[in-house]
Structure formats: C-alpha cells, structure tokens
Length: 598
Image (cartoon, rainbow, N blue to C red):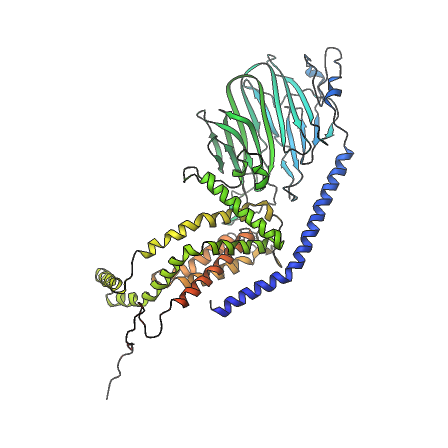
C-alpha cells in the first residue's frame, strides 16, 4: 500500500460521505416522522379501548349469593370461590410500552406484545408467545397453571395517565387448604408489571414457571455461518449478588443450587430482556432448559424455559416485578439494578472487569452517540470513533511498530545466516545471537512489544461488543448498499454458500479482507510467517461474511489505520543508501559472482 493508494482510499471514502450526507439526513428526518406517527397511532388505538375499572368501582361491587365477583381491581375480602361457574377468560391490558394478555387459566401471562425497542420498531413484536405463557405458579408442590381463577369485568383495558390499573385473580390450591389472591399492577409508562400473591395460610414452597421462553425481536438468519451465533443472543441471565451471569447452553442447567444469593433472573435476546426481580436478596434456585425450536437446525439460536423455586419460605405473600427491558444502555442504568450488564459484562475474577469493563463499553457507546449527534450517520460515526481510539492508543504502538520495522531490516542478514548454516540450526542460532549483539538488537524486544497490544485489547474488544450489541445501530444506514449496520450487508440473497455466504453475497467483507492482506503483507517480513499473510485475511473474511456490517466497517477502518502507520514508520526508519541494518555506513558489496576470464 503506497501513498497514492492510501490517498485514493481516503478520497473515495470522502466522496462517498459527501454524496450520502444529505440523503442520510433526509432518511433520519423520515424515520423521526415514522416514529412520531407510530406514537400517534398508538395513542389513538389506546383511546378506542374501554377505560380501566378503578379500585373504587371494584370495591363497590357487592357479592351476590355468597360469591363476590373478582374484578379488574379489588376482590371483596372473604369472597368464596365456586369453580363450577368460572369461565375461561383472557384479559388484554395495553400500556404505552406493551400489550399484555392475562389468562385466568393459571392466572398467568399469556403473551406480551412489545411496541418498540428504544424508538426502533421490532421485526417480531411478540416477545412472549401464547404457547406456554409465563409466570404460572406452583404452591406447596401443587400446580396451579391449569386451574381456572376467578376474574370478572371487561376483557380489555388501557392504562392511561398517572393512575395504575390492577387486575386481580382469585383461586385456591387443589387440596382446598389455601385460598389465593393474585394481582398484577400496571402503569402507563412503566416497563414493569408488579405481581403480588396473598395466601390465606403460610406457603411452604413455591415455583414460578416461564415455559414459553422469549422470542427474538429480530429476523433470525437461517444458515450455517461462523459468525451467525454472535449476531443473535439467546441467554439465561441472573444477578447472583456478585455479578450478572449470562449463559448460553443446551439441556438443563441449575443456578444457585447451594442456597446462594439471587436478586433477579430472566431471559434475553439481542435487543430485549425480561426479568423476574424480587427487589431483595433471596435464596431461590433457578433451573433453565436450553432447547432448539422444532424443525430448526442446531445453528438456530437457542430458546429457554425458566423456573424459579423458593423452598422453606413460610410466608403468606410473594412479591416480585416482571420487567420487559429494551436493551438501551442509558435506560438500563436508570434502574440501578445491574441491568446494563445484560448488554456488557466482564469477569469479576479478572481484575474486577465486571465494573471497569462495563464502564468502558458505556464510554465507547457514548462517544459513538456523540459523533452521531454531529454527522447523523452511524457509519461515519463508527469511522470517526475508530480513528479517535486508534489515535489515542497510538503512543502505545509506536515502540512496537518501530521495533518491528527495525527487525524487518535485519531479516535479510538473518536469512543469509540461516542459509549459510542450513541443516545446522544450533550453529545458525549461535551466529544469529552474535549478529544481534554486534548490531545492538534485543531478541526479546518482539515479546516485550506485545504488552502495548495487550493494553489496547480491552478497548478494541469493547468497540467490538458495542458495535455488535447496541440497539442504536438497528436499522441504521451507512452508504449505498449498506442499509442496516446491525446486519450483514447482503446484496444478493439468492446465492448462499454455507459458512462463506450463509445469508447471501456480502460486499464489505471483501474490503476488510483486502485491507487485512495489505496490512499483513506490510508488517510480516519473516519468511517463516509468510503463511499468515494469506491465512489471516481468509479467516477474517469467513467470519465477517455473517457479522453485522458495523463491525466489518470498524475492522476495515482499523486495518487502514495500521497500514498507514506501518507505511509511515517503514519509510521514516528506512536506512540511507550505503547504510547497514544498524544505520552505519558500510561498503557496498556486490552479490554477483565474478565472471570467468578467458
């Protein structure tokens, strides 16, 4: 990569940005109008639904014939239950955040429809499907998920304004020893559903079952690709009192089995999570079962069932919040519940990376959003962020790069020594060490040069995670054919090759592989490592064909920066004509064999 080629790349990128700048601003304005229209439509739809039944109206209902009807509000104290007169009912509750169906068969959540993801419309808004439902109860080892609970009132209500709405179910354990009242409380703008269970006598144990799992909000890619499983996330998550665990697995896995601490547990997908939060430390046990949906390949993202067990509780009440959390970093921070670690987490045992690494990722994301505020194009913001990070870490790489360039200047002499003592490695090594001593070269400098790279790794890994997981990049266009930086830049879906083009033909990985090739070629001069010049670009090409295009853009720009850096130092440190590897003037000796005289 010479100076003209580098200038051509810069000029080409500049022209692309200028050409698309106005178009991207128009697209941003149009997206803002669409979001505003969606909010307006949501308000209009909510206005068409019947008003919620207030607590005062609910309390005013008088029991007839010794039976008080359960309502969307308050159940009269001392009410009796006659299961023979209970009909199957589904109650629909709409807030500004989601639409929830509550099923009186099991007094559980039947389904959840999510309206948006931090301002982005989900591809699949049904995050909890109807099959199986969520938050079904077992009390004293008695399954209540199939029993019909008593609930009366209207089939739908909309939560508006500042008032909360309460949906109340009343039931009893199959053995008839306990009557139970279960309430779900909703607010208009809140992301949580507060659940309260009241039993007539202390419960010895309980279980909360979430059998339907959590659906992916994005269009899931089908195919076999090395990077596909890093594009989508499906994990069981929990706060164990020390750190947030995020685990993907197949089969059954038990958490907190030895009466450790559990604050909350749940499931997550790429841009959304749902958790059961007890708002205190408990000793509850969590059992999750990882599975692949029927008819899907093993490469398909896993789904999970989740059960939370409380034993030896001896309590009459059970309280927890069920939260639906679009994974927006800034919003999650406001809860002060470690929810932000659902997106970015670090190992607690690795120098408390669960603290500083999460903060580092947050800082990188804020920088990305800062640049976007000026350029209104997340693709350009990624380029600016990458250049800023590489510039800030540049001092760490200077010594390494300089040493690498100097070592390259010694490689011809080293190669001659090895050729001279071919088949005698010990003798060759001894002469090489003498050469190093004569030229003042530290043979361990290459190893020491790895430390600057290690210091930079957390920054580059955080960039990688931010660009692959941030909801801000969802649906964000860049330039020309790149319409969504959160997905691979597929231009031709009809042509698919497993592991190479699992989703279709992509373009940006070619740029990434080309820049990596020139980077490796410029930096690797050791004949014994020549295979790396080809192996690394090919390997990264295969990975990046199914990576989000934002990640590939970041890697490409980083490669270009490294090429420029290597080119600069190679020319800056190149010895003058007539100078040896050490820079000292030495006589020029011809390597041609003398001609024979007649």
